[in-house]
Image 1 (cartoon, rainbow, N blue to C red):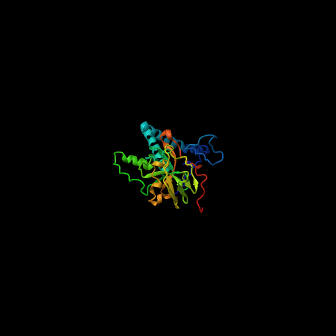
Image 2: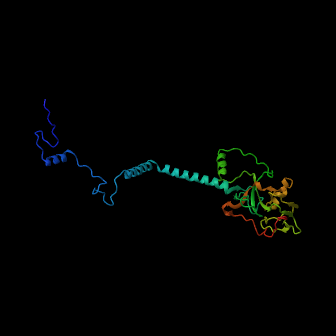
Length: 297
C-alpha cells in the first residue's frame, strides 16, 4: 500500500493550485459579512441625535396602555365614589386629630352663662389650656363634673342611628352633648383671695374690686357672701348669669367649691353655631388688670 498526501485547501485534487481570486470569491459567498466591531476604529457609529434602540419606549407605552385600559374599564360613578370616600376619610382623620390635640366642640344646655353664651350654642374649646398655656383670670372654661355638681344624666335609649351620632362625636364632627361637663368663668386662680362683697356690692380679688362687664345685664346679681383663698391646683369659677348659675358659690360643702385644674378640658375660644352668633369669646383682661399677685407670690 502506498500513502498519498492529503490535498490542502489551496490545492485541487489534481495537485494544481487554485487561483487566489477564486479562493477569495468562494470565501465571500461561503460566509456572510461579519458585523463591524462597535469598538473598532472607523466602525459605523449612530448619528448624533438619533434615539438609541431599546425596550424603554415599548415598556412605557405598554404601561400607558394598561392605565388607559384601567380607566376605560371603570365607570364614572366608581371614580366619583372613590374620590368622595378619600375626602371623607381624610376629613375624619383630620377631625379626630384636631379634636384630640387642638380643639373640641361642646353644646351649651343651660342658661348659666347668659348673656355670654345662650342655650343651644355650640362652642369650640382650646385644648392647649391649661397646658401648655396657663389659665388666666376671666377665661371661660369647660370642665368635667368629677365633684357631682350635676344631676347624673338619665341614660338615653339607644336609637337606630345612635351609634352614628356617638361615632361622629368621638371623632369630633359633632359636639359633645353628654351634659356631664360644665362651663364657667375663672374668677380666682391658685393663691387668690376672693371675697363677696365689698361695701359697694362688688366682688374683690386680692383686695381689688372688679367691675364685671360680662355679667348678664338683664338682672342685678344677688349678693351671696363668701370669703375663700384658692388652694394650689384649683380655681374658683362663677357663671355670668349670676342669679341662675350653680357655680362655686353653690358647692362650698364639696371640695370648698373649687374646681381642680386637672378637670379642665380647655378654654372656650369661639361660638361656632348658630351662624348669627359666631364670634370669639373674651376673657376681659381689663377687668382683672389691676388685680395684684396673691400674697406670698
